[in-house]
Length: 138
Image 1 (spheres, rainbow, N blue to C red):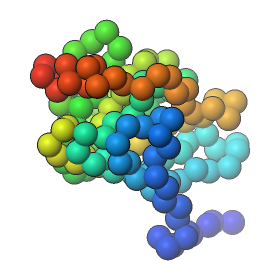
Image 2 (image 1 turned 180 degrees about the horizontal axis):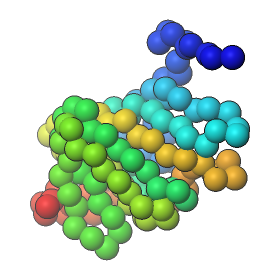
Image 3 (image 1 turned 90 degrees about the vertical axis):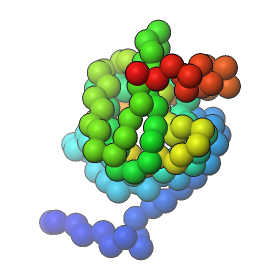
Image 4 (image 1 turned 180 degrees about the vertical axis):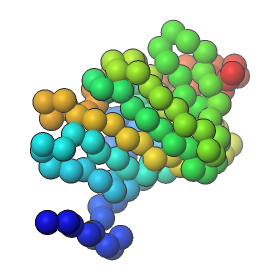
C-alpha cells in the first residue's frame, strides 16, 4: 500500500549535542522500513553549526538548498558549498559538514543503511579545525 505522510505528521528534531555543534534542526522526511535502505532528511544549520566527524558505510549525497556551508574530508582542504551544489561523499569517508560562521545552510541529506546502520559518528570537529576550515575553503 502506498503511504502518504502529511507535513504535520513528519518528524522534526534538534540535532543531538553528541553528534552536532550549535543549533541544528533535522526534518526526517523519509526513513523507510526494511527491506528499503535509503533514508533522508532536510538539515538546517544555524551560523556556526556543524556535524561531528562521521562516515557512512554506503556513502552520502547532500543537495544544498539554501545558505552557504562547508564540507571537509579528513586530511583534505575544506570546500565551500552553495545552493544547487550536489555533494557526493564516498563510502567510509571521514568527513563533516555545516554552516559558515556568518550564514545558515540547509541541505537535503540522503544515505543508505547496511545492516541497519547508515552513519558512524566520531569525535566533534574542534573549534580550531572549524576555524582553520573557514580560513581555507576551496
